[in-house]
Length: 113
Image (cartoon, rainbow, N blue to C red; front, side):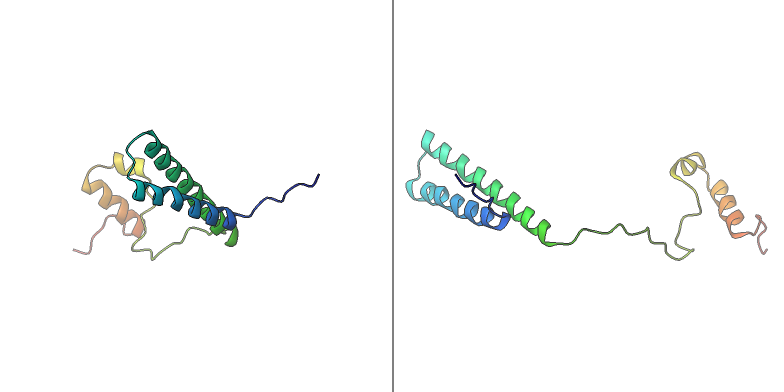
């Protein structure tokens, strides 16, 4: 007895999409509002979900693995001043933030006035 090979994701996706069209067409043509209509609707939803997952798997299998890229840094003017969120929360006043910013720039709080 030979084993059947497993179908690839594209084949499963196409078959599930075509399989979902059949109950949908039957629902539209028959306009059933009984237990058979509910079963057809659930079958349509199930096959549509299988098709979506299979399409996603096929697309993921095609693409290369994403590389981890380092965090990008922007210009120094736009970057935070080396302060984390807890420190910003603790430094509630504008004067404290201004002092940290001035210290970061190296002006030691002395302005050019």
